[in-house]
Amino acid sequence: RCAQEFVLATDPSSPVVFPPLLLRHLFEGLGEEQKAKLLEQAAELDGQLPGGLEGYVTNARKLLKDSKEGVNPYEGFAPSVPQGEHLKVGSEDFERMEKLGREALSQTGFVLVAGGLGERLGYKGIKVSLPLYDALESECFLKLYISHILYIQEKFGKGKKIPLAIMTSDDTHAMTEKLLQDNNYFGMDSSQLTIMKQNKVPAIKDSDGHFAIKDGKIETKPHGHGDVHTLMHQTGVAKSWKDSGVKYVVFFQDTNGIIFRSLPAVLGVSVSNKFAVNSVCVPRTPGEAVGGICRLEHKDGRAFTVNVEYNQLDPLLRSTEQFSNGDVADAKTGFSPFPGNINVLVIDMDSYHSTLSSSGGRVNEFVNPKYADASKQAFKSPTRLECMMQDFPLLLSTESKVGFTTLDRWICFSPVKNNIQDAAAKSEKGLPPESAGTAERDAMALNTRMLQMAGAKIPEVGQAGTYAGIKLDFSPMVVLLPSFGTSLSDIKDRISPGASIEITSRSALVVEGEVFFEGKLKLDGALELRAQPGSSIIVKNLEVTNSGWEIVEVKQDDPSATVTQAMRGYKVVKHETRSIVADSEKKVVDEA
Ligand code: UGB
Image (cartoon, rainbow, N blue to C red; front, top):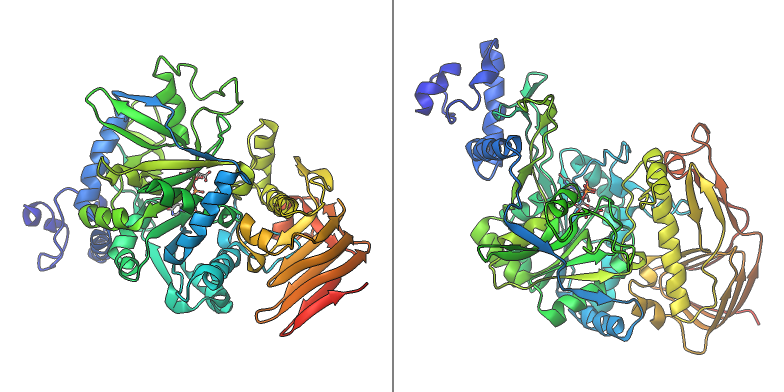
C-alpha cells in the first residue's frame, strides 16, 4: 500500500517507506533533489517519534477533529477540590516532614526540564544561564540547582553521588552543554549528570493534519515538557537510577530558583503518605497561568486527580453547576479553590519505572490550534501536538496514590516567565508578574524569613520602589547560597541557640559555605561571608557598619544597563562591602 501510494514521490529503489498520504502533498512542485532531502528529514522524524510519523498523524487527525467539533475533553467528568496535604512553613508538621525528607535525600534523583525557549520572556540565551540575583551575576539558575544538589550530596548523600538529568531541546541543547563545560559542570562530577535532548515534532497547517513546510523542510516545533518521561525511559536513565538505589525522582522547572528550599519537606510528605506522585502546589490566584489540581469523577465510575491546565480550567468549571462562575476566587480565602500546580513532581521510583515500562512514558497529547476563520480548517500559524509532564498520573494504575502538597508560595514558587512589559500588565491586574525582578525580590525575602525563623532579628521590609511599572517591596538584600544550606532545618543548624544576629532593613548579606553563627553579629550595611570548600568561618563577634548596597532604577533605554538589569528595571549598586573570606582554613571572627 505504501509502495503504491507513496513511493511515487521518490526514487522507487529507496528503502524508506512511509505510510500513504502523509507526505504526498509536500512534494507538489518539488524537484527530485528537494524531494530526496525532504524524505531524509521525514525518515529522521519517523525514527524519533515514539509511534513514528504514522502514529503522530493519526493522533493529530483525531485530536484536530475533536477540536474542530468542539469536543470537551472533560465531557462527563465532574470536577471537585481534591484532598491533599497543606503544610505551614515552620509548623511542627513541616519540621517532621523536613526530617523525613532529609533522610530520603540520599535516595533521590533530580530531573530539570530545560527545553523551553521562554518565548514569553523574550530572552535570547537559555533561561538557566540567567542570574537569580543582580548583585551576583555568576549565580545562574543552573549553578544554583547544581550547588543545592552538591550540598545535599555532601550532607545527606551517605557517600553516594546524587544524579541529575537535564532535558534540553534543539533550542537549548548546545548552549546548555557549553554553559556546563565552560564552568566545569559547576563542580558536579560529569558521571552523575545526564543530558537528554527532546526532539521537535512536525508542525501542522490545517485540520486535515497536513504538515507545514518552511524553507524546503517540514517545519518542526517543541512537543512540550511531557517528553521528559519518554526520554527517561528511552535513554535508560530511569532504569539505571532504579538499579543504583534511587527511590524518588524530583522533576522541576528551569527558572524557579527557590524550589530546593521546600523539597526536603515535600519529599517527607511523599515518604509518609506513600504517594506514587506528589505535586507541589501553591494557593492559586484565579486567572493566573498555573494549572489547577482537580479531582475528576466520571459518571461511569472513572476518577482521578490531575492538573487541569490554566487555559482549560475556566471552561471546565463554567460547564458545571457547582462552579458555574468559572475560574473565580473562593470568597473565604481570596484564592481559587483548586490548588495551583507549580510543576514540581515527586514520583516514587517503583511506580515510575513500572509505568514507564508499560507505557513507554508517552503521556497524553493535546492540540491547541488558533483557527484562521470560522470554518476551522486553516490555522493562523502552524500548530503541533503537545504534551505535559504533569499528565503522568494519567498513566498510573487506578490504585496508585496521587496526592499533592500545598505550601506557602514564598517557600517554593517564584519563576521568571514574563518580559518586563507583560509582567507590569499582570501586576496591574493583580496577577503574579513572574519576572526577573519579582523572582529576585522573592528569593531575598525567603532568605530573610529563613534567618528570622532561625532566630535572627531582621525586619522583612527593606527598600521599596516601582521599577518599569512593577511595584517591588524588597526585604533586606539577603543571599544565602546553597552551600550554606538548603532547607529551613539546614539554616537553623548554622545558628547556635545562644547567637545574637541583628540586621537592619537597609543591609545586604551574602553567606556562602560552612559559616556558623555562634555569637554576636550586628550588621548595618553590606557584608559577605564566604567560606570556600574545605574551609569554614565561625562568627563569634562582629559588628559591621558601612554605606552598603542600593537598588537603583534602570531605564529601559539606558545604554549602560546589562540585558539582565533591563529585564528587572533596576540594578544593585555596591557602595561599600565588608568581605570576609576563608580559603582553606578555619577562620574565627572575634572582633570584640
Ligand atoms: N519545557 C521543556 O523542557 N520543553 C518544552 O517543550 C516546553 C517546556 P513553560 P508553562 O510553572 O506556572 C507550566 O513554558 O506554560 C520546560 C505548567 O504546564 O514555562 O508556564 C521549560 O523549559 C503549568 O501548569 O510552562 O506551564 C520549563 O522549565 C504551570 O505549572 C518548563 O518546561 C506553569 O508551568 C515549563 O515550561 C507554572
